[in-house]
Picture 1 (tube, rainbow over the protein chains, first blue to last red):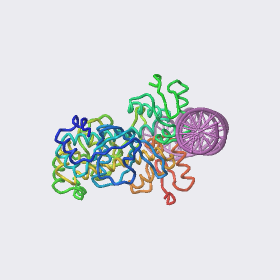
Picture 2: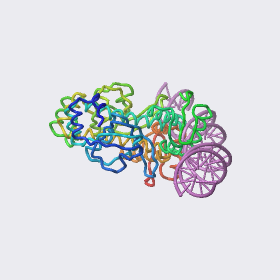
Picture 3: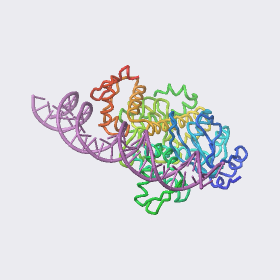
Picture 4: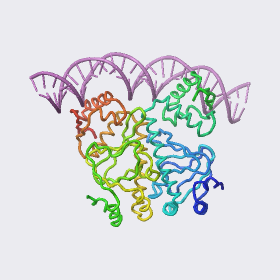
Amino acid sequence: MNLDNLQHVFEPKLVTEMQQFGTWQSFKEGDLIMDYGKYIRMMPVILKGTVKVLRMDENGNEILLYYLSSNESCSMAYSCCVEAKKSEVRAIAEDDVELIAIPHVKLDDWLCQYTSWRNYIMRGFNERFIELLKSIESIAFHKLDDRLVAYLKDKQRLTGSSVIKASHYLIADELATSRVVISRLLKQLENSKKIILYRNEIKLLPAFG
Amino acid sequence: MNLDNLQHVFEPKLVTEMQQFGTWQSFKEGDLIMDYGKYIRMMPVILKGTVKVLRMDENGNEILLYYLSSNESCSMAYSCCVEAKKSEVRAIAEDDVELIAIPHVKLDDWLCQYTSWRNYIMRGFNERFIELLKSIESIAFHKLDDRLVAYLKDKQRLTGSSVIKASHYLIADELATSRVVISRLLKQLENSKKIILYRNEIKLLPAFG
DNA sequence: TTTGTTTTGTAACCTTTGTTACAAAATGAT
DNA sequence: ATCATTTTGTAACAAAGGTTACAAAACAAA
C-alpha cells in the first residue's frame, strides 16, 4: 500500500490509524466509484490517480464538476457521511485509482485529535467550494469556445500530456452540449492552427497557449 | 438579543458560549455583509432575516448563488476561516438581518466539544454543496424562461408573499443576463396570465403555480 | 408644473448554440 | 476482405439569447 504521500500531509500516528481503520480500494480506468442515490458511509482519500466528479439532472444530462487527484478528498462525501445521506454526484476513475475509504466514526474522532486532519478536511471543503464556483462562473459567463479551451487545458494539466485522448462525444457530454457543436468548435481551433485532430485524440500545438 | 431559535438547535451550554464569545451584528436591507477579497476571520450564524450570496467574475458579471436564512450559516466562511482566506463571494442583506459572528478559535473547540455544533456545521456544508449543485444544474440544463420562473418561486417562498418587489434590471443581474431579455420573458408570462407586471413589482397569479 | 431619472416596452438584428440529416473515414470483428 | 460500429465532417436550418436603439411611462425632486 502506497502511503508515502500521506506522510507528507499527516502526522505518523494518524497515518497509522488510517492504515488500521481505512479500507484500501483500487479502481481501473472508467470504473464507477460512487453513483447517484447510493448511501455514503465512507469518505475517500485519494492516494493515486484522478477521479472525475459529475452531476446529472432528471433528464439524463450530465456535466463535469471537477477532478480530484492525489491527496484530495471528496468533501461532499464527508458532509454526507455524518447523516448517512445519498450521493448527489457520480464519481468515475479517470485512470487507475487507489484510495483509502475512512469510516465515518473515525472522521469525527480525528477532527478533534489531529490538527492536520482538521486542516486537511477544511482545506478540502474550501477547494471544492471554489471548484464549484469556478464551474458556475464558467457556465454562466463564458461561451462554449472558451469553456472548451479551458477544458482541454485542464486535461493537459491533469495528464501532463499535450495529447488528449477523448472523442468529441465525450467532451460534448462533459460540457453538457451536443457532439456536433463540439466538432464545429474543435474544427475552428484546428483551422487556427492551435490543435490537430485525430480519431479519439487531440494534439495541442504550441500556439494553443 | 434573540437567541430563541438557537435553543432549538444547540444545547444550552453552547448557546451560552455563543453569547459569550460571538459578536452580535445587525444589518439593514441592502447592506454589504461580506465582499470579494475581504479576509474572513469569523463565521456568521444567521439569527434573523435573509442573506443573498453572489458570485462575480473578472468582467463584473454577477450571479446569484443562493439565499441563507435563519439558523443557516455560511459554510464557505467556515472553511475559509481556518486558513484566513479571502472571500470568494459577496453577501448582501436581503432584508433586515441579525447574526452572530463566531471567532475561528471557538469553531474548532466546539467541533470537538459539541455534537450539535458538529452536525450543524456538516449539515451546513452539505446544504450549501447541494445549493451550488442546483445552481449549476439550473444554469447548465435549463433555459432562461424556466430559470426565471424558478427564481420568482424562490422569492415567493422566501418572502412568503406573491408580490415580488424587484426591477427587471435586478432580476437580469441575478440571473446573469440582460434586462431586455428579462422584460421579454416577463411579458410572455404576463400574456399567458401567470403574472401581472407593475413598476418594481411583479404579482404572481394563482395560475403561476 | 417642470425637469431629470429610473423603469419598462418593443422592434430589429446579430451571434451563439442546438438539431437533424447524411456522408465519409477509421476501426474492429468475423 | 467484408461487414458492422464508432467517430468525425459538414450543411442547412431552428431556436434562444444578446445587443442596440429608441420611446413611453412612472416616479422623484425642484
